[in-house]
Image (tube, rainbow, N blue to C red):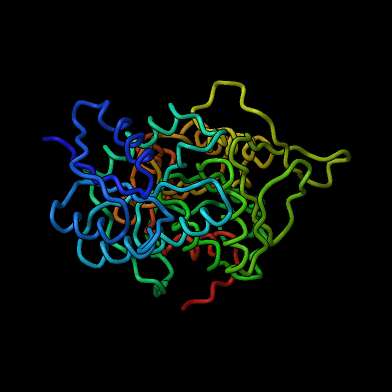
Amino acid sequence: MPINVLVVDDSAFMRRAISKMLEGEAEIVVCATARNGEEAVLKAAQLQPDVITMDVEMPGMGGLDAVREIMSRSNIPIIMVSALTQEGAETTFHALDLGAVDFIAKPDAAYVNISDVARDLIAKVRVFARRGAPKRMPVRPKVAMPPLAEPAPHPAAGAAAFECVAIGTSTGGPVALSRIIPLLPKAFATPIVIVQHMPPGFTRPLADRLNQSSNLTVIEGADGVVLRAGQVVIAPAGRQLTLRRSYGGDDVEVVLRDDDGHSLHVPSVDVMTASVADLYGGATLAAILTGMGQDGVVGLRKVKDRGGFVIGQDAATSVVYGMPRAAAQAGLVDRVLPLDHIAPALCELTNTAFARS
């Protein structure tokens, strides 16, 4: 069965460019194109494509309104095509909140590797054509503490012995993080380090967005940033994030470096979690969230070898159950939880009171 894709963009050049990327694959067919949101809504209803690629900014009905309208009528997966600008990033995150499943960088940007964009787009089209758009979760979820009848808790649970939380995620991550970080109370003292796969230009807007809605301070990582209580550090796109003890050993600080060519993802969950495990050992609390592929397995194995504890997001609430599944299949996950139980679990394991909604 062919995968039918509707390509939406106000630029004829971009419609051709995206169509050419997709139609280079034998099983993918561009069944139609649309120049604006109005056409996209009409053709989505008429053709019922397997996947839609949606430009963020278009005259008339823009990408946001088109996503909202299409998602109100159907469950067609929508992949946003976003310019690498602050405005483009913010609009893209809003589209994800409305139900778009993922995004790619617009391939006309001078510093975008076109072959990487094409490979990313094709992989996402294939995944979502098989799965469809996941069911949207309520905007303000009622959160309950997870049952304690899961695998035996880590010896540090309830003893506030965890010194660092390491979170890795990819596809579906921005929405997942918005369901975890803003729910953590101001009293959550354990520093958090996050790797979210995304193109350059998106991690700072993501950090700013989470910071505005959180009790904790959320920043994009930079060389020499010291991990602090109540602080969340997001690895910047295009750099690998590791940690080191400062001179004298009193502080732990961020070290950014270029990739050595061995990692598929930059930043990499493997690189970050392995570094956290090297520094904190059994005091590492890790979480692996929604995402394609298996980034995180190598680093989480080191977390487990050092005596740390790992939470994995479950299949039902993952946009793509790839990274958490790979970790679980490797025997590296101590507790599997739905998304809205992860913030309470982080509080439980660090002996922090969680404010139930």
